[in-house]
Length: 320
Image 1 (tube, helix red, strand yellow):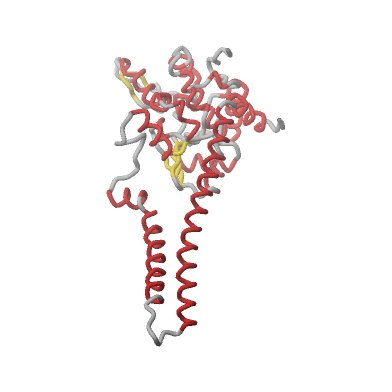
Image 2 (cartoon, rainbow, N blue to C red; image 1 turned 90 degrees about the vertical axis):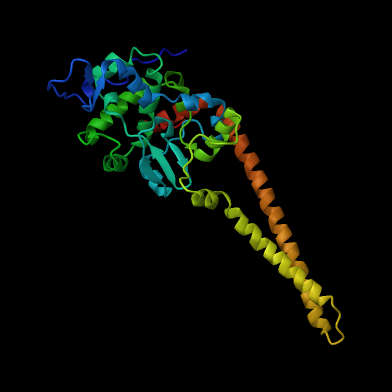
């Protein structure tokens, strides 16, 4: 097994090096972003910033929510018409739903060499989480356009420059080289929220709640979960209208035009048959696509190391 790297960047390539030396209380520690934390609460604070234990608890289900190593650059998130929502919750980092994706800003304490060496490198539970989180940014910020978007969204400290980021990123890519070095949550990249909610309900053995619910009003909940009823009512309306035509055509009045009666019977029957076939085809397509996607996800599930290294090689322009 590959021994974990201790510090994923050199002192020369750290992105934050300046420190504020103004006086602070003796029982506090100043973080690289000037946040003051009580000494006894530092590890709790770092844990709150880096721990992904909720995702680790359902790790065996993550293959259904995302693909190994799949993290798309920031500019491509815009191409996919996704709104990038900035969150400070690490357990929502790279979780997406519909046209939104949550991304946590890169914490300044991860960019400071001395702080990383003193507080993260010796911590066997936080170090893999820190390395995994940093590694996602080597994929999120790949091009200059990604870098500009990151500054615009506040994902990076404003003092970071493009050349400095490039050097820092190359350090990460040459030092974080195996999936065993990072927390297992980061074996997977972007995760679909709806499937995380389902997995979490199975894990909790409860139909209530989920991993993260985005509904704040009943209206939003019903709109998201019952839109299919409108389609069902539309189909039923077609069928009922067709049945009405059939019943009218079969009344057999003496003056009924036989041609019109035949046309009504044919159109009514065709309407019912077309609805039935449409539902059947959609159900078949849904089943086929579900089976294909599940088989693809199962194959990729056992190929975490290949997916991890493939992205790294492609970054350096090496075809594999």
